[in-house]
Image (cartoon, rainbow, N blue to C red; front, side):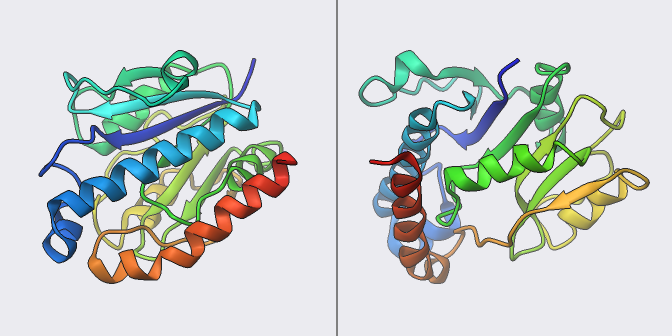
Length: 209
């Protein structure tokens, strides 16, 4: 079975995405950033041809049109109801028998090489996490043997999200990837420009393009 990458993202609509960032750079600039980040990530994952890529969007009824031929190569699914943990658990249940990873769409340093590293880590660990600088995580990957409630009792959107999740994996082998920074504020936005260029250059080099 082919490994699966779920990209979790909010549907790109003016005024509904990256609201903290929008307070610093404006709603239209925040929307452009969100769209650029999301579509760039999807293109690179599809070009790698190593994974099945599924875009999981919220809100559930949102209609999203992908550029170019991405719409023919990427499945789009609603995230469904509940908090982030409930939505992620639902995605993993859809791939109960195989290996899967969930990534966010606002991590400028994230490249295909990081996703490859996550699945490589699942060859020896039950779970893999990409720690974020704010205490959360930008990737979570699971193999077939998982806790019953991998995301139970997690304090989301705060500095304890990764630590709380790791508590659910106590006694199981877990691998950690490199620490990356997501983009929530104007300061994050301007700090992200160099890592974004580096990750895209690394992906192009890895694909031989």
